[in-house]
Structure formats: C-alpha cells, structure tokens
Length: 302
Image (cartoon, rainbow, N blue to C red):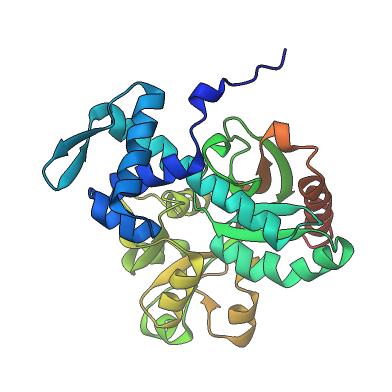
C-alpha cells in the first residue's frame, strides 16, 4: 500500500528555509538579510512553522533566537533535507534530458585510473552526467546523495551491493637518492628507515612484513590520507611508501620512484563498485556498472 504523507507534516520550503537560516545564524535580522526578506516576514514564517508542527522551536531572548532541544534536532534533519533538494534541483537543471550519476571516488584511484577513462563512458552514454565526490571510507547511502562509490577493502559494505573491479599489487617505493643513502637490501632493512602509512590502510605495512617473513613489534612512521601525497613525500626523500604499482606507473617509469626492495605483494583487499540495491536498476548506474566492470577486466591492476 502506498501511503501519502499528510500535508500537515509537509511545511512549505519558504518556512523551512527561514527556520534553517535563523537556526544557523541565531538571529532573525541576520536570517532576513541572508534571505533578502524583512524581519517581520522571517518571524511570521518561523511562527507559522511552529504552529503547523505544534512544537516550540526557539527560545526568544531579546535580540537572539536560541534553539530548543526539539528545534536543534529538527534543524539537523532539515539542513540535510534542504541540501538534498537543492542538489537534486541543480542536477536536473544541469542535465534535464539525461540521467545524473553521483559517484564517490577514492582520490588517487579516481584521478589516476578512472578519470583518464571516463571519456569513453561518456561518449558511449551521451545523456549521462557524472558528478564526482571524494569519500575515503564507507558511508550510509541512505543519508547521502551518492548513487555509487568506489570501495577498496573486503567485500563488505552494510546495506550495499558490490561489483568486483580488480585486485592490486603494492611495492615499497622511495626516491633513488634515499635508496643510495640507506643500506636496504632485504625486507627486514625497512624496519630501520622512515616508513609512510595511509590512514585508510593502517595495517598495510604489517601485512607486508608478515608476508615477507619479517618479525616486528611496532611499525611507526608518517601518516597520509592519500597515496598521491605519500608518493610525493617519498619522491622528496622523506621515507619509503607502500604504493599500488598501477597507480604509480609514471613515477616508477620515470625513475622518480624506485623499489626499495624488489618485493611486490598482492593486497588482501580488492576494489569494488558499491551501490544501494534499490538503485541497481537506475539506468545511469546500470550503464556505469557494466562499463567499469568491463573496463577493469580489460585493464587489470595486478
């Protein structure tokens, strides 16, 4: 059965916008200036919203408006709802005749592997617009205006389906000068030099040492949130970074980076396309899923 929400619980956008502006600024005057309305108009809209909901949203204190506990909770929900409505409207205006795919990407994977190939997808799907946003870790699709996401990890994302893309191989890499300055010939020698860690892969070095039979207690070093910055730090001679070879092909080919020891290792985790099941038949997503799975199969990382 389809249930239609009572209009009593669907306030007008103008009332909600006024409420959100006052909630954010704490002032009717500031909200009126932001919305290009009179103070009395903003006050009337907020009062009308309170009357419609039957709940006091603000405590009036002289020249300020302070949210009640109920108002604060409501403001958090309304801000996100207004953002999503605005985003949907902007997407529709930008591409009124085709579909829009909002895709979350991992930054280095997105810039190094995906972006150079996207032209082929767009040429084959001229009605589709793709918006890219960076997300470094899994999120709740129900609370975000994202249709799909590139995921690196184990095949698990609560509330999402996963399509396998590829595996990867990593190599401990550093600058040629750094390698000349340090005596590195065996895997255990890396325990004596500065190591670089990715915050989203906190145990990557531990896995590498264990896989190469090197006993260790603790592995310390600098933290980075992206491979690109870790690679640049390695090129600058700050230490050794454990990097995916397929994302660093140019740096390795030019010799900006070299293998500290020649011990590539396949990562335990894999790359996937994650998406909510209820969006699986959304045409732009279905087209992109089929394309990226085929593209990854034709251009495997490992």
